[in-house]
Image 1 (cartoon, rainbow, N blue to C red):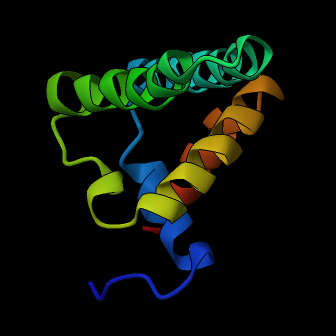
Image 2 (image 1 turned 45 degrees about the horizontal axis):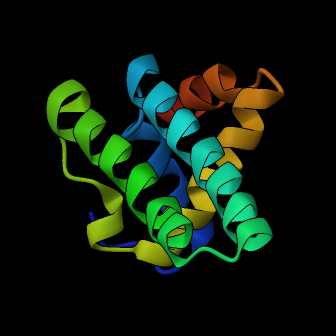
Length: 109
């Protein structure tokens, strides 16, 4: 399969790399923690909290890929699209629509 040339092409690949609910839960937790740490970093003017906001979500996500999903994190090949997809996935999870999106992408694969 050729590499994606746009975010729209990347999204289904990203979704299918996050089929396991536990993987998505790790990403969800990491992303929300990142936003909270970033807000705290701004409020406290703390470089350490900025560093934590960058490291914590990646650590959680990568753990889930290596030990739950058993695949390679998309961040390695498409860092910006992966970050955008993570935000979209969290939004879909908050609205209760991520399971439906996984099914939709799996049917098209």
